Image (cartoon, rainbow, N blue to C red):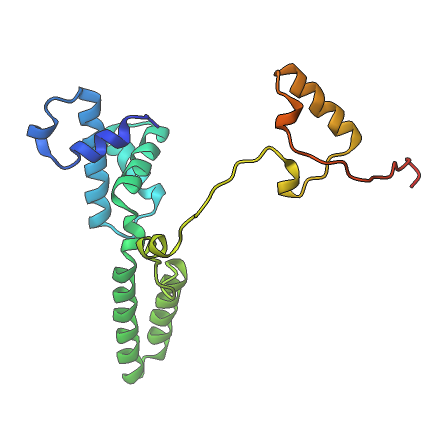
Length: 196
């Protein structure tokens, strides 16, 4: 992925030719692909990443990796259309179940069962039983008060043995790091032989 792509997308996506005329040709092409990807996904919210990749490869004559980059840029900049389509899928399930109920009331139980199985498959595939979490609410309630950076492996529960301490001292010496900068304390240990 290009490092400047997100900035270009944020500043110029959907600005049209007037807004994009000062960009390089490759940047305008990238934006056109992202716009096409997004609008195509809005038209076909049930498409998988593979279907979208194949569409982009055919539409713009792209290789596989470039098409996947377009999809990741689109998802990053505009959100995941597939998860936004969950309400669409719920409506489709509701429609199928309404038809299944009508078919069952008319005595066509086999057709009703088929429609119910399709609705169930949609529900499982798109996990419509759970609501998507709004990350903005989580960010409001979750804060990190303090971050402490330590070079003491005990902070992670790692115990240093004699051999590891020797290796650590060699590395510290190699990179001219003072032992006073490293925090560790002696721990009691017992040498174990091969047979123990």
